Amino acid sequence: MAIPTVGGFVLAWCRARSGSLLLPIFVHSGMNEVAQLVALAKA
Image (cartoon, rainbow, N blue to C red; front, top):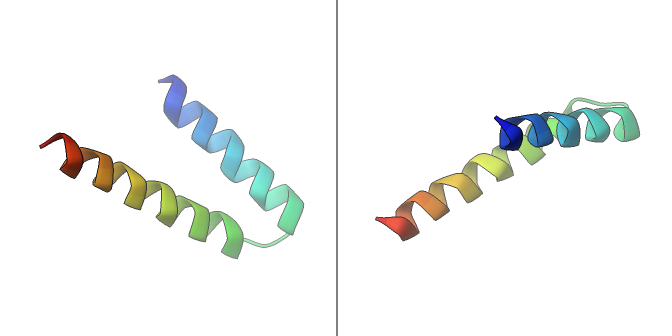
């Protein structure tokens, strides 16, 4: 539960800093990609 919470704070911070939803969307996509790569590396 801690990791999604930290991710949410990061995305909220990105939104507050940029004033746009584009940066949080790209960051979220990047976080998803990293999670997939980690899952593939473990398999």
